[in-house]
Structure formats: C-alpha cells, structure tokens
Amino acid sequence: MNKESRTQEYRAYIEKYLTDWYERFHNEPQKNLFEAMEYSLLAGGKRLRPVFAFEFCRLCGRDWRDAAPFAAAVEMIHTYSLIHDDLPSMDNDDFRRGRPTNHKVYGEAMAILAGDALLTDAFAVASTAKLPNPGDMADAIGILAECAGSLGMVGGQVLDILAEQRECTEEDVLAIQDRKTGALIRAACALGAVAGGATQEQFDAACQFAAGLGLAFQIRDDMLDVIGTAEEMGKGVGTDAAKNTFVRLYGLEKCEELVRKYTDYALEALNCFEDTEFLKELALSLTSRTV
Image (cartoon, rainbow, N blue to C red; front, side, top):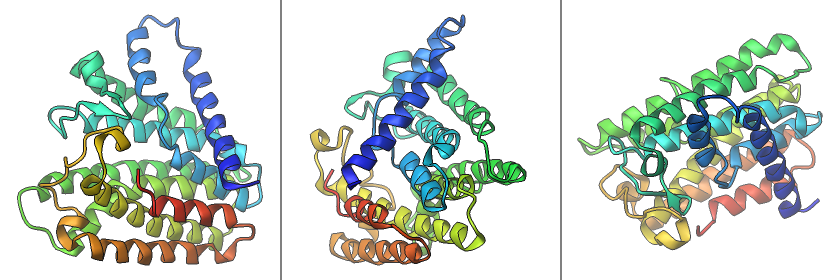
C-alpha cells in the first residue's frame, strides 16, 4: 500500500471513530457543548498523531485498529489545545483550518468548556483500549497524562509565554518545542507502540522517532509562518514573529539544516523495525512540506 492510500485509510478510520464516539451523545441536554466540541474536533486537519499511533501499532505486530482509542485520545487533546491556543488570552487567533476559531463561533466561555471536555473525555476514550498486556494500561494513561500536562504540552505553553518577555537561547527554544509540539507526537508514537505490544527496544525507538520528528516538524512550521500565506496555511501567518522561534534564533538557512538533522535522527530510530517505507516517506514529506 502506498503512502497516500495508507494515510487516507488511517485518516478515514479515525474520522469515523471520533464521529461515532460523540454521535451517541447528541440527545444529551448539553448539546451546545457537543456541537462546539465537534466543530473543532471534526474540522479535518492532517490527523498526524493518529497516523503515528496506528503505524507504530502495526510495526509492532498487531492490527493497527487496536490503537484507535489511544489515537482518538491524543487527537482530542490536540484539538483542546488548539481551541485554547486561539483564545484572546492566548494567541487571539480568528481562523483555524480555514474557518473561524471556536470562540468566534461559540463564545469564549463555551470554547473553554469545549476544550476542558475534550481533554477529560480523552482519558475515558483511552481507557477502552484492549491491550495485549492489560497491565500496561496504567503506564499508557501515565504517558498520556505526562505528555499532555505540566511536564509536557501545557508546560511547553507556559515556557512559550514566559519566553516572550526575554531573548531565548537554543536550549530554551528546544525546551519549549520539545514540550509544546513534541510531547503529543511522543504520546502518539509511544501509545501506538504500547497498543502493539512493543518490546523495550521498539518502544524506545518509537520515542526516538517522535523526538526527532517533533522538532523537525516544529522547525518547518516556524519557517512556514514566515514564508507561507494565510490561504495556503488555513490560518493566520506571521503571528509568531515576536516569539522565540527557531527562525528568529537561526534564520531560514540554518533552520533548513536543522530540519535535515532532526529528520535523520528520527529515521535512524526505525532501523529496528521492518517495512518502514511508509513511515520514512511520511516523515520526509512532513519535514519538507510547503503548507
């Protein structure tokens, strides 16, 4: 199966999984909440984190569908973070994925609550996973919580806010992006490996891949904020100009070198798996993308 076909299969599956999960709640009295949640959750996007979870589950030897609860949970947490990122008290963005941001449609209070609900529901979804070793569930929930919380994505957001008040070093920017963007990619890859019954070597390799790919992806994202257009990106560009991004630290030419460096580090981790052509091609396409 080629990259496009497999990616489409994974994306179609997670779209239906997420749709089905919330469809059964449409008759609940708090239907406005579910409408706001689904507005952002089902708005499309690359669905990269579910793709990584599915693929690492497959590489570790199990049916990739076994990773669906984890894939959905990570995507729900990612969506909550986008809703909150766009709020006036954060990035104050008007558009996301080519549409008005959640708070522009439903108001700030409902947007905050939609994000809160997505974050909390993610753990309910994750807990339904059927693992080859049921004893791994506690570790899996721990991975999800750590990557999403104060040591992961939320911690990265805090560091990003604090960094606006000063000039950052390379170490500072790496600390921000490893948490802000990298943590949920790490969660997706690690949880996919857990769902697949990974050996310790395979689990460590999944984490190494995530670490390298997460940085390469974020650096490319920083570059596109400078060289992309709002029409291409489906959101505002130039919004990070005052932030301590890799582009501000190094410039575009050096960033190109760093993208290659971290992509190579990610690809090196795949040597312990067989049939990695899809993941390698996907990684290279993501770190060389123009939109």
